[in-house]
Image 1 (spheres, one colour):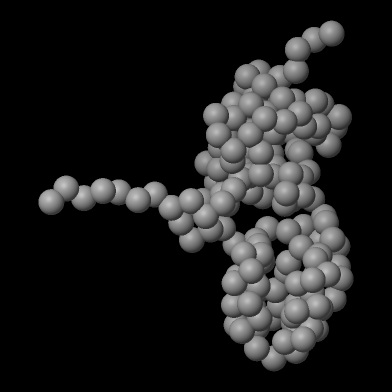
Image 2 (tube, one colour):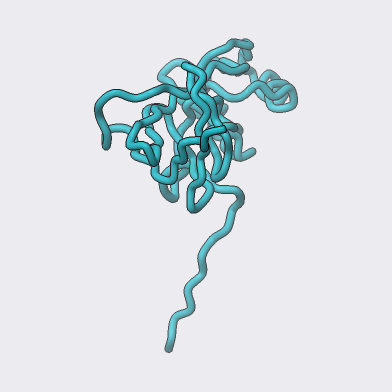
Length: 157
């Protein structure tokens, strides 16, 4: 049995070029540190990153063989949210720390019956769809984090 190629480096979208295998992952699966993945052509690879990382559409994993594996957002169950006041609806979604993909005329969120019901009560039209999900990144840097940890610094007086 041969050893799996290992990915310990990520290149962000726009910071790499050339041929690459493809790996389709849904939003939750794109948040990882150590995991066995399979490319669309059936190649197994081991991801072993130094820290948990949020991979985005177009990022690439660099394998120890020198090959690249491009990350593609896989289709998943989502809600397409429309309504007369998208800004207000987006605020309520964000207030619940729910990842949201923002377009000019609609919002996309992962299918969640509780959030969907809340949005309908706020006047939204919530339509189940299947599509790739690439929500907005966090305000405090690239991607997402496990929790709301904030770094406090002591100031000497």
